[in-house]
Image (cartoon, rainbow, N blue to C red; front, top):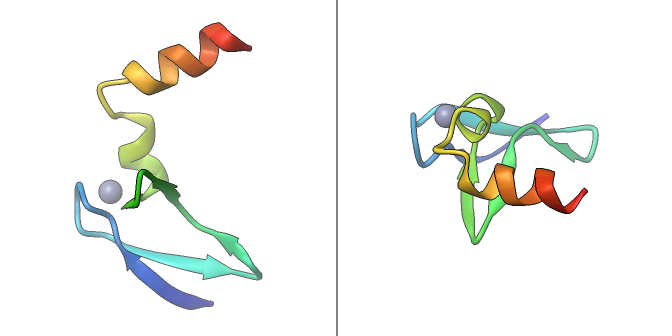
Length: 51
Ligand SMILES: [Zn+2]
C-alpha cells in the first residue's frame, strides 16, 4: 500500500492498494471515496442519467 496523495476536499491520505486507487482521481484532483460520494453530485447525476 503506497500513499498516492491527499484528498483535495478533506485532506485525508489516499492510498493505492494492490494496484487499485483507494479513492477517485478526477480532472487531476484526488478525492477519498467519502468526499467523492458526498460531493455536490452534479457529475454523479450526469453519470447516473447516462447509465
Ligand atoms: Zn476526503
